[in-house]
Amino acid sequence: MKVTIKDVAIHAGVSFKTVSRVINHEGTVKPDTLEKVNTAIAELNYQPNTAARNLAGSKSFALGFIYDNPNAYYVIDMQRGILEECGRKGYELIIHPCESDQFDIITKIQDMVKRTQLSGLIVSPPLSENPTFIEELARLDIQFVRLVSGDNSQIENTSCVFIHDREAAHSIVEYLISLGHKKIAFISGEKDHKSTLERQEGYVQAMQLHGLEINKEWIVEGRYSFDSGVSGAEKLLGLENKPTAIFACNDEIAAGVFLSARLAGFDVPNQLSIVGFEDSPFSRQTIPQLTTAAQPTQQIGSSAAALLISNITQNRLRTQTNEPRHENFTPELVVRGSTSKCK
Image (cartoon, rainbow, N blue to C red; front, side, top):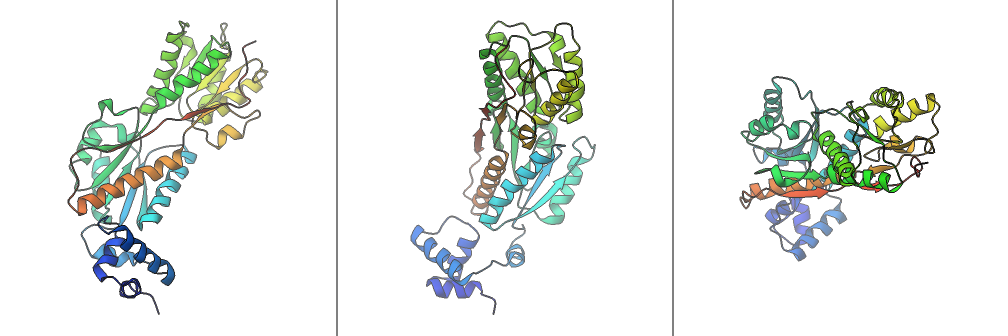
């Protein structure tokens, strides 16, 4: 026979309501009682009935992940992190890809929230960085957490997970300069992603700090794609005043730079150093492997889900304050074989 919540209560020697509080992660159970209930759940192999939990309130025990990102590795790692935390806390996850430039995007999200009775949303760039979208989202009766490139200096009244891309990009360029490179180029991603602007600003700041020239021809506008890296590198390596190092806005772009450099007969890294960003599988598929900035995307997703579930729980218990809550991540430099001293 299927184990019920009453069986768990009897086994643990506590009330039905106490077991319910533990299952719903309400945070009001004493540590020793919590241990008893969790032990009973494990010993009896009890599985909470998600449908019953959802019927008990107006909101389901489910989160939504909204994204518009062409980088499959980013999306997969983010989903893994969110699902990991959802599994720990007894939540389901609904994945909702979308096109951020749709004129009726907020209406579509609103319909999705009502249809699924979601408890909360995790919103990724570029939607998470769109002030108009966030203002409209705040009007809905739902908790949400934003993934944002940058820091909290310009963010108010919303809970966010911040990724400090500017600091990481600054570190990358500092490293290239320490190798003797002075002619450093930059290939960007889409400008509607704040990560692009932050990474480019980190590049510019590091160059200016060392009094190095920033040739306008060395900054190439691109997209977060392999093809963009190929075409961007073709432009840069065709210049009379060629760069000795190229900083690509992500690893996929950098992999395209690799191909273009090889086709043009450049020896990487002896004639050209190449750096990416994010530490995606692309960074380990080149020969030599890419120097990059490791962005812990799975951990970021898990952290965003934990923050959101905590806010949802506090809201249900009516203990939530109006103060936004923030988590912070700074990608770290990973040195591999695609960079060397400037010859």
